[in-house]
Length: 162
Image 1 (tube, rainbow, N blue to C red):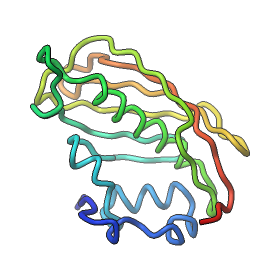
Image 2 (cartoon, rainbow, N blue to C red):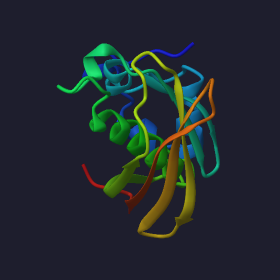
Image 3 (cartoon, one colour):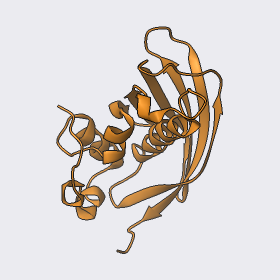
Image 4 (cartoon, one colour):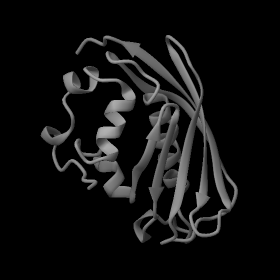
């Protein structure tokens, strides 16, 4: 059962995050043992599958994600892609490591209709001591069409200080 954090206190404490591998941490979110971040509830997406070097998110853009011209805002594509690509890097981290996105790029290929469910698939290309690189794509669940692609570079930090 997936649930989202409703307060800062419900987010996983840093010690809990650092005490397990990135894959174990992500599995805890997917399996509902740890609350997911509220951004997923706000924008209508969540992680549904993780493995080493892989993170798949499922999302359905809502009316509130539309831009003034009546299409899903590019920020929605960017956020779901940033999430799946960076979480793919997270799955390759050892206990005691964290990451943050350093930069990402997206290419929107076609508009996603509001209310259509998509999968955002992030796959690791490289994880080293200080950086992780992954690619992503957004595909329609029902039609299989490619809606967007992306790439990211994440910085990896070992034993971060508070």
